[in-house]
Length: 70
Image (cartoon, rainbow, N blue to C red; front, top):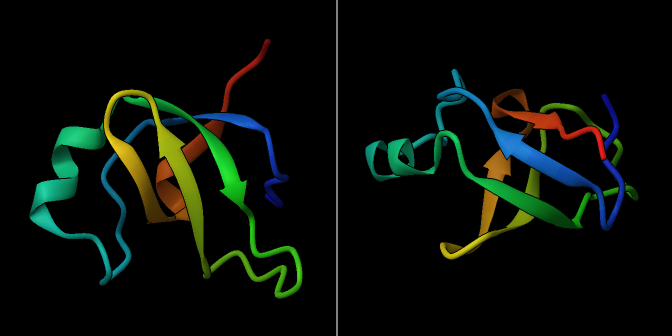
């Protein structure tokens, strides 16, 4: 899936990506907005920048994110 800037997403599970750190477990269930989707790369294995509600902005692997239906 290709994410776009401004899209609302949920961190719905832990990532299988080697970049996933144990402190990121607290983000599971959090909602946020894509702020940098790396559209110039368009690689599903790349990290995307997400502004999580109440948790700041983080670069997360895409396999832990799913779009929220508005």
